[in-house]
Length: 304
Image 1 (tube, rainbow, N blue to C red):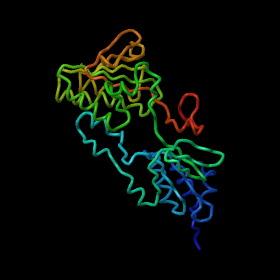
Image 2: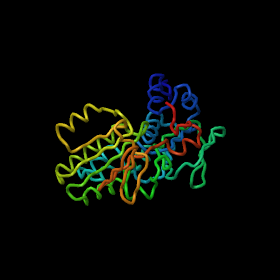
Image 3: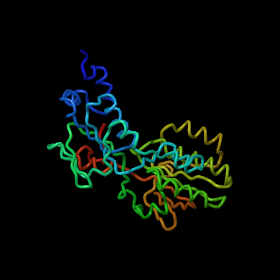
């Protein structure tokens, strides 16, 4: 008679997909049927995939996905939305299919984790007991890291680093800008989510400007002296958008030390730059629940 539990190789693949250590997952898999409880906090790419794969590969598990949003808006390809090449609806996905796969979707947020009692407290007042916990909540904006930049400032100088309303706001600002205007983008120091993304965004915006407003320019202020896939990006900029994108590195004075939202101004170590459209890619950190759960360190990130 074949075993109801996965073979070792399948178990290792399952653990890798879930971001769990094989030795830690085995006791859950080995429980009596229906008792193994996994709670996944965060319904983005990592959390949703983890919950779905666990349930598909091992149906006896009770898997609960904790995610407050009814609709997930994808960040990958959102730069195409900003440039007018893609509709925001193409970025949006519900959780019905995951629920149909047998995952319990709790549409609320996790407010605390008790690792001793193995319990997650939810914003709606309920608690979830778990045998294993996966925390995949994504990033939060570090609103205290850049003087002058807060949630109100983001309505003037959108970050668009969490896809959705901010993505559409930046798109509207580009559409409203006069031909000949300057789009200023600031890129933070490492680490942050998706290192190539500010440079992809500059490329997408340059494509839009070349197509719709060819006298305009992109100024990219950077808190680094090098960036991911730099040679590929700069070669493409020279070929496709000559004289349209200017990159100012850290050593050239590109580090933004504060912003002035009323005038869409970026203050650097040596200068000030005003944008007709101002896009701040702000400093970030792991989501707040990671600190409450004790898995983030003093840097604000979770060590890997």
